[in-house]
Image 1: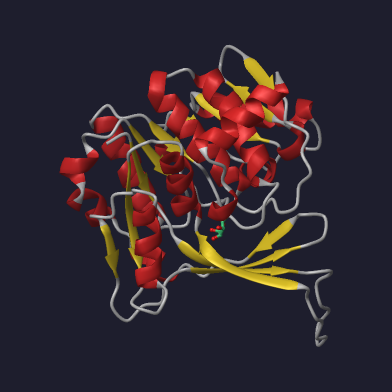
Image 2: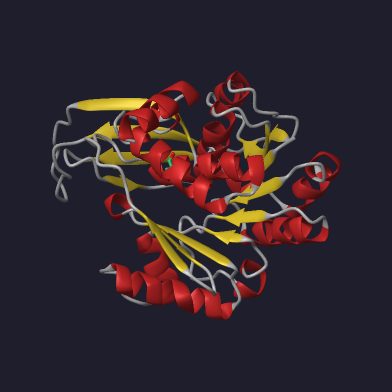
Length: 306
Ligand code: RIB
C-alpha cells in the first residue's frame, strides 16, 4: 500500500448561487449538484486517480448515503477494508455555496466522521504499517489525528497533516511530529494569529511554525501559488493561470497529488509542482472529486505549459 488516508468523507450538497440570501429572504439559485466529498476522501481519490494504491480509514453513517460513499471509494480502487458504518448516525454532509466568482463557502456536519477513534487506527495497524505515507486532516476527532501521527512516528512512516478546517485547539506538541504541514493562507492566519495579506507576511507566519518545531510548512495560496518553508529555505512555486469555475476541493486535489508524487521518489519540489498543476486543472471543472483530472489530462496540461 502506498498511502493511507485516515480521515473524513462527506456528501457534498453544492448550490451554485448568484448571491447569498439575506435573513428571511428566499432567492432562486441557478444550479445544484450532489457529489462525494470530504477532505479525506477527496485527497484519497486524487492520489488513487493518479495511480497510487490507497487505503482509507473512515466512518460512514447508516443512512441512504453510506453505501454510495463506499461504492464511490471502491470505484477508484481505494481499499475500504477499514471503512465502516456507525449505527444510528448520519453520514457527514457538507452544504456548499459556490458564487459566480468560483469562490466557495462550506458548512460541515461531521456525523459519522466524529466517531473515527484511535481504536480504529489500531484496528487497521497491520495494513497501516505497510504504507509509505499517512495523510490526515481535521474533520475527525483531534485525538485520532494525534494518535495517527504517533503511529506514523513509531513505524517510521512520514505523515502529512492538512490542518483543515483550522482549529485553534490544535496541540503543537503532536502537530510538530508531522513531516509536512499543509495549510492554506486562511488556515495559517487562524493558526498563527498573524496577518497573511502578502507573501512576506505568509513567510513570517509560516516561519513561526518552523520555530515551533515543524520541519516542512507548505502553504497553498490559491492564485498566488504555493510557498514551501523549511528552517533552511523558502521556495515559491507559481500558480498556473486557468479559467476557474469552481475552487471547491482544490486544496484536497493539491494534497492528494502531492502525496502521490512524494511517495514515488521523495522529491518534494517536484511533488509541489505536479500538485500545483493538478489543483489548477481541478478548478476548471465543477464539483470536488469529479473535477480531478486523469494522469493523461495532467500530462497533457503540463506538456502545453513548457
Ligand atoms: O475541501 C473541500 C471539502 O470540504 C468538501 O468536499 C466538503 O465535503 C468539505 O469537507
